[in-house]
Length: 338
Image (cartoon, rainbow, N blue to C red):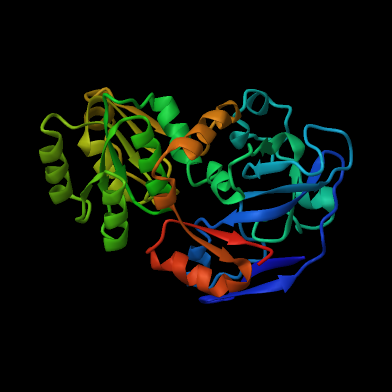
């Protein structure tokens, strides 16, 4: 099979790899849509990567034993893998499984673990059906395009009475706008990239296009006309935007973080949390039981085409990474067989 790799600083290529084989409950899926996520960071830094991608939609082409899927099924492959037996897996919150099976030990290599390739192996119970009328490209948004913010908004119980602040308008942040607008919430969004600002405005968000800090906070409070926003979601993964979410939140508001961050946010427990009675959470994905609700957003939201901005054949992987690194795109989806 062909798979995408990063070979050096701003250099990507396709290479040959062995076709993975179905084994036990691990199903072979022919990938038809592989969304790009934060892999561009390795592309820009020159960190060589042989196994790229964690989002996919495709067709079941081989099974080793009877299970939940059959050859020919159209499926979304949920990110990562898990034991399927612990409390978290059984409750649908598999994403935090503490007993992930050792993929390389089971299969003899890491081939098939990453989604930017023509085939992947996935446990059958982590394959969710794509209904008729939903394309592979749109179905793949049920992973990171819509998933992290959907999970956060479910826990926050975001609704039409709320004004929500969304910081960071990359593909995940734009997906958050889609989810928030579908719930009827008013959206205030923050970013500094002109393309992202324009796209968010097309989605119906009020955008504060200035750096995070005191000016952004003042602009947000002016838009709200009160004590702050009802909810805040950071998708940027920067300390300044995380701080903005906390500072812009009114008392008794809900704040969630879904942007991966390598630095430490300084939180003053008394003024930030106790005296504001804030509810603060982290969110990685959504409960598997909510997959039908995510599909409802995909099928019914008029904003989906503003999130899914580019579909490219994987043969144009260099161009795809340059586009992703430019920040002038929503979700970019690769077609591994093109």
